[in-house]
Image 1 (cartoon, rainbow, N blue to C red):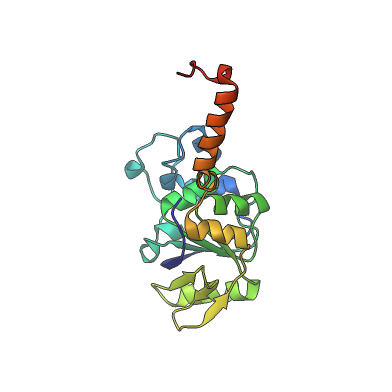
Image 2 (tube, rainbow, N blue to C red):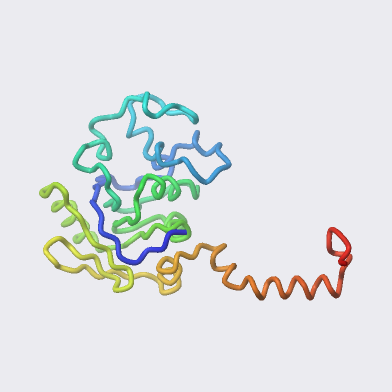
Length: 216
């Protein structure tokens, strides 16, 4: 998992409340058993004018010119600004996969659905919670200033605005530790690889019949 320390990025506004995970990545794309390739279908039903199906050539599809992520000024955005209850609906982990594979590193919203919020941390996305008035102010500033970017400093737990003003945010210490160090659940386990190997060697020495092949 990619570590998150300090990130500066263009902000894209998703000015809708209660955006559910089926809107983030529609159900027909969940057939894949891989954990890659979901970025092109992020917000598929809003992003394209035609119906999306797995395996389509995205280059041949008709983009919706009114959708925020298709507007030239938001191309390359890596911070998504959203309204309350972002990520509600089903618990599909494909939703943070799609957001991360599109290129987003962080989300800012007043609130998130609980399971989606947890899944973001497990997949290298930083979901930041700010009070609703601060989020509303950010929406106004993004609309007023093309190229609006923010700097997110996770070690200091602040968002730095273009004028230098800082917005503090809270993050649970263990989740912060994992993001700063780039540890997903597997990475956390592999910190103890030496102990795991030692345990397995001792176990097989005591109970060799558990091995697929006899010990030499």
